[in-house]
Length: 334
Image (cartoon, rainbow, N blue to C red; front, top):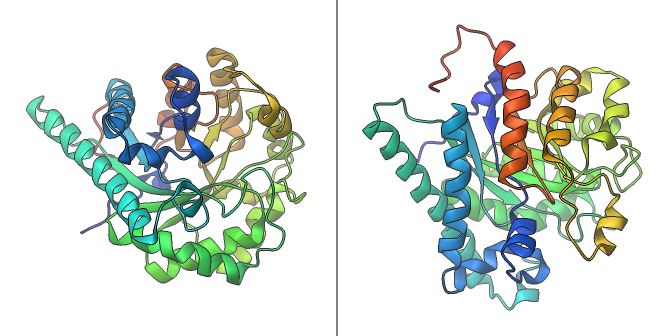
């Protein structure tokens, strides 16, 4: 199966979704042990809940006139977390494959709708979402790059063979794990995106500056990552770091921020959802855009929902379209 091209590397703006898990838990009252959304796939009506969720975002992309990156609900579907939830290796593989198949069906449905409306096929990429081996907020200091490559190669292989267009590793907190993931994806010949999370001071939970983390991953993998992202942090947590400048910023193509300004420790201890202010979050995205010359993928993370991504799209997409080379064939009806 041919993979869809990553047109965001040419600066073409794409939307993504918001905080899947926080939406399910706090807005829909669904229990997610281990924050594992993939577990819905074996529950009654679970697949329908995920379908409804992604349909709402695809409609937003249609309304905004832009393409979409759909992340499989497999952030926790790896060999460390699967057994915690009672999955055998075979069941875990089936869940990863089912997650990809679900999004493929949604993409085909959206493409059929576009053709019936006499619109160009929308650019919809399916990204195989993976997470860290351990807790996203606590760096796994004992995990070497070699160990990370071995650990993550299983899930990356399953997702790649299932036909994803790319693999995205979210909420990474240390460089060695990111390096191992890039190497594992390179071995599978699937494009890979590394998304780091940062604390309120703009540093990774490991203590390393974001700039150094990106530069080191590139140095140890010969720049094999397709691009980098930042997720699970408020824009105010990364603004000062970006203002320091440097060519490393050109490697950041995506931003999926939290709604809350709270630290990771505060969010972990919170008993209720901090939804922040969608319009304020959107304003900060717009203000960060000039500091990220290659920003193209816009979405949200913890605490964000359709309202936040809609506000982000309204505030930021005009800036991104303005800077796009008009000679590029975006295949998107604007």
